[in-house]
Image (tube, rainbow, N blue to C red; front, side, top):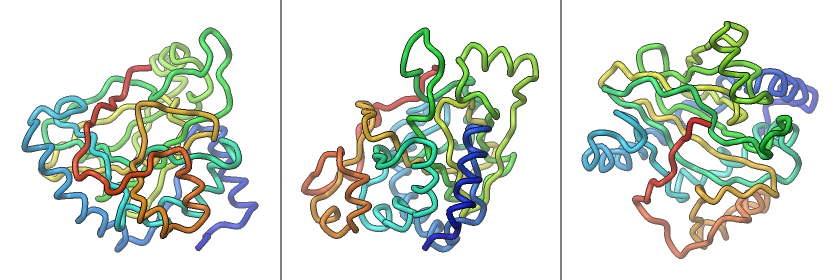
Length: 262
């Protein structure tokens, strides 16, 4: 059920366009996200056991979520407010292209400042938004367990200008504490980095990727089980239209996606 009226969504989209991200506090029910946390724990464990160094840098794990059960909940992946904001900043009829997690554990380090995708066109001005990440944590996040560190207003300028502005203080670094139920919608070109988790408890952050309908990212996709697809409402099926349909989803995935220092 939607929480925001059309004028509030307009205001949130305006804030997004200015800053490159927007936060929706207490958006999802805490009990729902805690159920995701419990279901995620056995998916993380084999990655930690098989690769003590992390598959995304020291002590940091990228883990794809199987699109089934509670991970295929239309109330989450097709939330009316989130999709409404996505459409305002990245065009109508978007595509959902990614469902995964980023999890630092004890021993993780600062990432390099980076963007998650290059510009659409080399040697040309930055464009309006075309690739968004919707992030929400499965545990409460504070300074001790690896909050995202980001910058405002760096999503529609070049990486070089953003880095120069960061160093000069024009785009100060900003850590983002989040509670279970909070949601962040961000343009993946905004300059950001992960920070160390100093605790003994993993800090999983879900990422749902949405893009303009014409933008294809070959490095990410969602395997959608045929039975799950058939049970989804039409709007959710439409969001998933460019993903492969499979008979059943894997329990572990080849995590060949990496963030690059774009």
